[in-house]
Length: 158
Ligand SMILES: [Ca+2]
Figure (cartoon, rainbow, N blue to C red):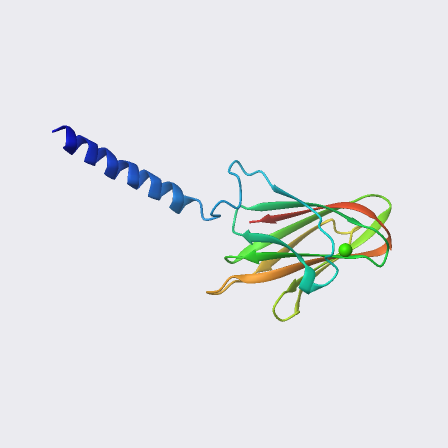
């Protein structure tokens, strides 16, 4: 009798566990509660080959990057793996010392997905990303139009 009850509890527990895992498609990329995962910038990151890898993005996930362009010629590249079709909402918040340009490229082909323009207008850039059966690597490239200084970049997958 006792053994049977234990087994029932085990099945229920397993189903609950499966439900939790199935419901969180981010696979641990977001800490729950909708908070953004923080990243510090790591140099060198000037080229697609040295892009800082931020990991996978699924709907509901969010990364926030604290970076800095050390001089007007500096380039900062970040690589995300988009796991499903989603809209990537990029928000950039530079220091007044720097005027940024942010571009999103398909990592494998180098094809431009969206030029988000400079940091004056707009400061928010929504980029639809269509993903087939295989996850798509996207490079986010930050350059300076003028000046140099720190910035905050938020990648929100919706
Ligand atoms: Ca750099």
